[in-house]
Amino acid sequence: MRSPVDLSGAAWRKSSHSTGDANTCIEVATNIPAVVAVRDSVDPTGPALVFSPTTWRTFTDKLKNSELHHGT
Image (cartoon, rainbow, N blue to C red; front, top):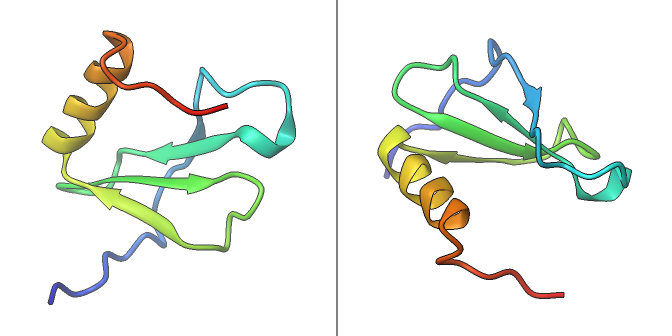
């Protein structure tokens, strides 16, 4: 099992694709070495998901290319 990633120095930024609805915003931090962290902006002290940069890039590329679909 991996050790938890220290996100205390994370520089969080709101997604440019987040809507004006305060309940659907995510924040992303890319300044932590070797990880991309993602959290719910409504609950900034809650849990964060942590991805490798390669995995995050694959995910975002698939979203951009409409290869993934979200539910309604």
